[in-house]
Amino acid sequence: MNDHAATGAAVDDSTVVLGIETSCDETAVACVRGGREVLSSVVSSQVDLHARYGGVVPEIASRAHNELIIPVLARAMLEAGLDGEDVDAVAATTGPGLIGALLVGVSAAKALALAWDVPFVSVNHLEAHLYAGFLEDPDLQFPMVVLLVSGGHTLLVHVTDHGRYRLLGQTLDDAAGEAFDKVARFLGLGYPGGPAIDSVAMSGDPEAIRFPRSMIDDGLDLSFSGLKTAVVNHVRANPQVATEDVAASFQQAVVDVLVAKARRAAESTGAVALALGGGVAANSLLREQFLGACAEDGLHAFLPSRELCTDNAAMIASTGWYRLRRDGATPLDCGADPNERLAPSS
Amino acid sequence: MLILGIETATTQVGCAIGGHEGVLASVHAAKGRRHAEYLVPSIEFACERARVELSEIGVVAVDVGPGLFTGLRVGVATAKSLAFALRVPMIGVSSLDLLAFRVRFSSRLIVTTVDARRGELYYACYRQVPGGVQRVTDHRIGTPDDLASELLASGDEVLLVGEGAQRYPEAFDGLAKVELVDTGDSYPSAEALVELAHARALREQFERSDAIEPIYLRRPDAEINWAVRDGR
Ligand SMILES: [Zn+2]
Image (cartoon, rainbow over all chains, first blue to last red; front, side, top):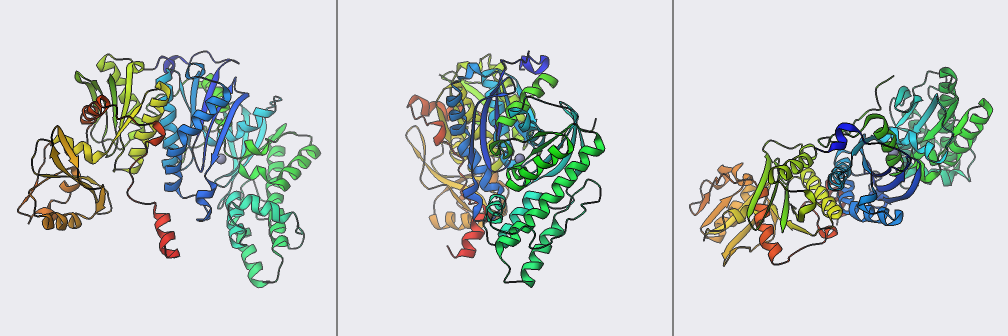
């Protein structure tokens, strides 16, 4: 067996981790030194393959990952100027995500770790989104609250230290990104819905329609399916309504809820910092209002650049570095878990 | 030249190491299905058993199907990544070719089958040629009854092998010229893969890792539904 698996080799600022991410529809490989220094980060998006279906098709995603994994890997190593001997550990997303897609990245990562005789590290995709903010901001502060919003997830997490998480709240139905996709599809704006609504909303009036802010004063859980229904009903009742105004008003309702919940979560836990992560964190209005809220409440704001909000492997490699330092290597008989949760509460 | 063979096209998981001395070690999990969990530790174990360092491997061979999609992707992704890291060439072999290789001494028409689920089989036909067998049809997918009618129409003496056909013996019951055999080798095996790949390696029939992809034979359901809706 791999020696590293038992001992957990020394992990320091010179340790290079190669990260692999294939949980959904991005095939991504990155090389990160010391958990922070991004040497390369290559993301190959399959968005065009899935666009006509209005969402990610698991079998198509799995096939594409299998075709793209080696070219993306080769490019990430070339851009970083690394050979196999320079890689000290290989990390991969083991969940949550699409099982067939995850297995491609996990299989590749374990094979590389075996061939290069270095540790393999399993990384939780949600944990990695939390770490995305740290990659660009060295001023790490605990305790913090992370608002994680993507097409698959909407969660509020209390983070008291590396690897110490507590789930504060989550969506009870649709993820925020899912609501963007569904509303965009209904409005005929195409896929993916987030960027489509973001750009159309720029020329709309966010106050034009008062859509419901579901559960806004009510705990830390969230709900978006009522909002989606309200949009559909409003457009059916008012066929002449301007799409720009619907998009802007819908987006405003989502952002109002997300920001209000994040602020309340920070206040109730005594957090000193607030972080945003996940694909929906690329939304212009959310970014603007998130920063405004942090400034008003005196919270340190972690706001990753747009490239690090959406799925990427730099966040996987970075998380892998912290995880390797904390827990050592993951055994090579590890598989993938489509429903993998964040580490249990602490 | 040492060859590592990886076989994950069915519910089984296997790997083997060998070369001109034959197969040095093989590891095989019969009720696998957990391909991703078993495969890499199996390769480690096979190396130990063969007293070989992974760095001594000169070719990575992989069963590219047809077979179980998830298993195939685990095997192909693992094999391609190993070949990339070790900087060695690859050889992709079809699961149906592997089954035929095991019965290559028969002079009958050889028909090999792998279970395709949903009541269908993957199959292909082979003829003996000097030094082995040659595939004389494409890889196909169809119901056991489709295959039975094809075999009846051919009029050939047929040796029918593979776990695919063995799941549906009743479909071939009435065919006088067709013998459905249980050779004990009804699954593609990693040992056969290493032997067959060795023969190809001697002829330098290598492939680049980016040219190796699973043989699916079925389009994704979403694509089929789309085409139907769209009249394509
Ligand atoms: Zn994500």
